[in-house]
Length: 404
Image 1 (cartoon, rainbow, N blue to C red):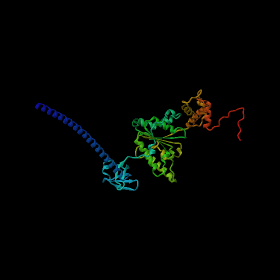
Image 2 (cartoon, one colour; image 1 turned 135 degrees about the horizontal axis):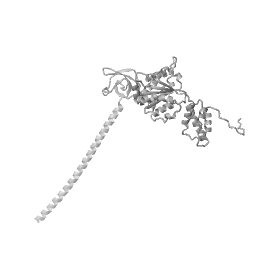
Image 3 (spheres, rainbow, N blue to C red; image 1 turned 135 degrees about the vertical axis):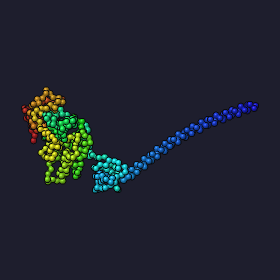
Image 4 (tube, one colour; image 1 turned 45 degrees about the vertical axis):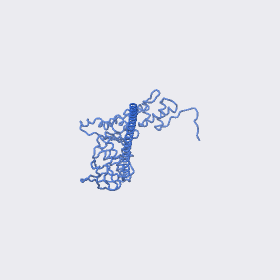
């Protein structure tokens, strides 16, 4: 009996040991779960604290007083600077500690404290949207092959604009300065703008196009600022080509008696003269100007050193008109060919733009009659319409309608 009681006690002890081990396992599992929850809560607390710090920083930034934009006029020997704010005269102010190591240059745009006018930061230079929008991103489709009858003029333009950018070593070997720019003058419709498009297509340089009238602004100094920023962008994007179309709108002769608007245009012209041949060299920046009124351009604009070459674009002669007709009709579906000599004779005095309009009108006459080809008669009608001639009357046996 003693042995039976002893065996029963052993079984009870063993059962209790199993229960204790099972309980211990549960407690360890619970401890690991609590430890995981603790790490999650700690990470979430750290994240929330970082978010609080960020929000506090953003709040402090939003509560900071606004800064005034100014221009740096001078840097003094004692570390202070002379600035001109946008709201007042010149001031001598201090520079914030975080800005002292920055490169402070005369003319730089800076941010000023509203109360003390201290320099709080250096701002990047700002270009007017008119100037930044003048950059031609996509190259035009026009090529030199689309220009007929102007081989000599194209050679002069390419020598003045392309060669200095593509082969500068030749100019160094010869020992001469390359031309700064070229001025295209001629009647409207002779191909001045088309030549500029071909130059933009044929070069890898940045092409910047601006119409002269866009440089004429309402307020005093705005036009000169645009000219300055235009050449600043050209130098930043160098090698570059600046094309100023309708140059006579801003480059007219200066008069002794002028209105306030004329004087503002003259200020813009003087800034343009200074940029073309001023103290700072243009470098790899070439200028193309175009005007159909060279007689009213200022003499200072026409002198060598600004526009080194003046290329005259004349109305096309008969041979040139034949070439232009061939260029504009090479993609047209023409019946039985064309007598280009006869078309050139019929369009005496026409410009390249007139010939393009003749070809377009000839195609429109064919479309009007539901044809997919163009005939010589269509070209005759188009010439009469574009050149302002009276169309030949067709003789019929019936009387025409009468109108009261």
